[in-house]
Image (cartoon, rainbow, N blue to C red; front, side, top):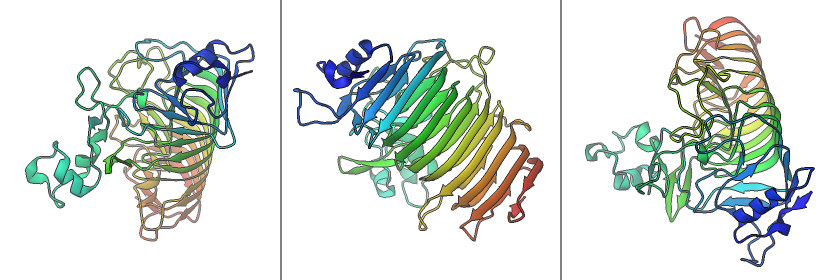
Length: 419
């Protein structure tokens, strides 16, 4: 067991790298509040690049904060087997991030890039309608009125100081994800607060046999920077991607800009090698060499709100998701606000939803507060939905979008289904 403060470098990133090189056989690295003769009054860690976690590594944060610097276009933590230009990340084992006390990961004051690979960087990137009218040069002048602007006038751009800089990607990518693990088995992430992440808070690709628990999020799809509220896209909480299985997600709280918990098995048919930019996948998507599906997942005890999207989202596109238990979901959206749905099953916007794409799903004990409670936009088969309370009297508890969207799905007697 070693203490990061015993390996001080010229920068905090160098300090972490020194500690990783000198960790002992047990692989445990303690991260307390920062102590250094360089900027001695600053107790939080300020990093310029991701902290890379090799196999058999345990990070224990103790009442500490790690913040991204304005120079950082990278993750807080990333499994060391993946990254820029690594075509085929090899499987590694036994990686853990554990918080003791109040432990926080905080985004930069002026992020270089925020959002996913479909979002164009802009600086400034106004959020409020009046500021969009005054400052958004991507909106045609004839449409700059409250009546004519549409949803995408705000949401196809996202804040980033790299906007317009030569040699820098003008889109978001996997570097904006807070904690990124790829092809990791036997892992855990626990008792961490993630504040104003530059993209998704946590993303796992082809990971197995792990737990994510006691995570609190604080993001709202926008941030006041230099006096202007800027749009900050795709601040999901937790995303499980293709190939994930045998994972428990529990005790999730707070607020996110986008989905709180999402299982997104999106198998894009266009090949991209691992470590490519212009994508939120750090792994390759050669589906002849890796699993495209998600299965054996438990999601429980989620009390949270999403600024724009869903509390739990299951999305198979050219892939399948099965054996999922979702239990104990409380939508904490304030009474004066609403969003699309508490739970979303399927979505045609990302590729084909197979008719057996969602199967053996158990959903129970949900308190909804949204435009509809459970939105079944794709196909659901061999599943059970029970004990759903809908706090919005003007919204259906369950809505089925497709004529043949259900096959052998059982509902509790209290549930009213709108077809």
